[in-house]
Length: 164
Image 1 (cartoon, helix red, strand yellow):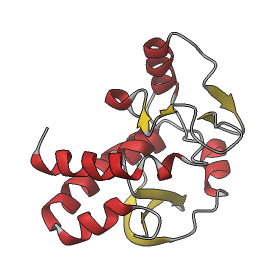
Image 2: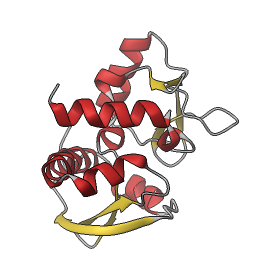
Image 3: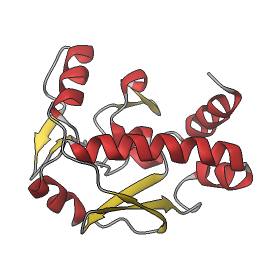
């Protein structure tokens, strides 16, 4: 783990998973299989226009346990993207950064350019991978999810569809 990753991990551990509240993380078929294999169960998933992780009644992601992700070493793409999120339109992926008020990691990234660039690059790779494996219908549903307190930071080309 690099020093940036260690610092980011420490910040996330102090937060306890605020980004995991109401996340309904989208999953590719491959990611679902990995998580199912790790946990030995398929009770963590639901379909609501796209395959996603379930949340408890209080909004916590079903994988959140005492402020930690139960599949931390194999997090889904949007979780790896960290405080970056996305929307898709007209062959473009808009990349958004959450505001400091909802993610303490943002303050660290804004104060450390190299860490920001590394996390941004990871986010772009993860988001491209996810988007390339979702159908237009799934992306359409995901695009309807309100993501308040974000700021657009980039536009990237929509990747070609990949087969899983």
